[in-house]
Length: 194
Ligand SMILES: CCCCCCCCCCCCCCCC(=O)SCCNC(=O)CCNC(=O)[C@H](O)C(C)(C)COP(=O)(O)OP(=O)(O)OC[C@H]1O[C@@H](n2cnc3c(N)ncnc32)[C@H](O)[C@@H]1OP(=O)(O)O
Image (cartoon, rainbow, N blue to C red; front, side):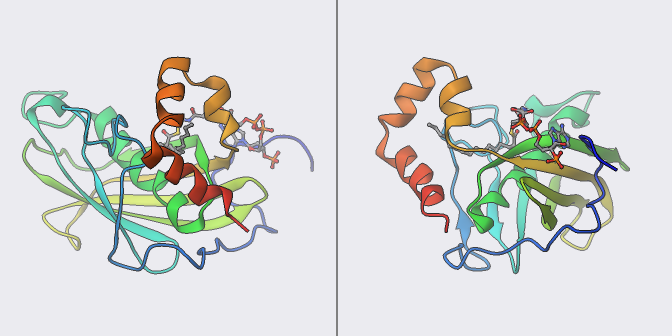
């Protein structure tokens, strides 16, 4: 069979994800990839401010405290915000493989309502790689890292070059990012990918 597929199940000839030798050690905080990122940036007042930590293998953990600005129904988190938290956690797996990849497909299950002020304990893991496609999965639990699963997601991320952002981003932000030594350091970390 040939042709483009967006399936979330890896094909039979997919390989395992490979942790980069210089990936952050398990337990180490993976810094924000961009100050103005809604998911991880400190510069976004109503952002999620996710602080992601490297895990073993190609896995990460993060905690997200739901704030008033994240409501959908009264006192409950908006589903789109929860999907964003899963997406951001999954995106952080890039830092363990040192491959830049963007979300191609994200399928989310909402299993329990998530109240404002609760903490979502997130965990994401890459499960397989097929050419440019990275298959990964994530959960968000309530009450603690072993608590009940409130949200979960399966995703396919697609590997891209830095040019993806340079070519498509708004020039004002791209130029500011390229002039920022910290941002350039983030980009260089990927350029040394063997
Ligand atoms: C200067 C500053 C630098 C800053 C440095 C910072 C870098 C760090 C940023 C990280 C950020 C993370 C933040 C959180 C994660 C996001 O939120 S990322 C943002 C949301 N995602 C996007 O904006 C992606 C938008 N989509 C696209 O740009 C394009 O569709 C893509 C994904 C690049 C693919 O386009 P393409 O390169 O033309 O790929 P294409 O040849 O069509 O397909 C390649 C393969 O992928 C598969 N594929 C394509 N689309 C899909 C899909 N939707 N579903 C499943 N499979 C698909 C194809 O089937 C194909 O597979 P094979 O046929 O080879 O088996």
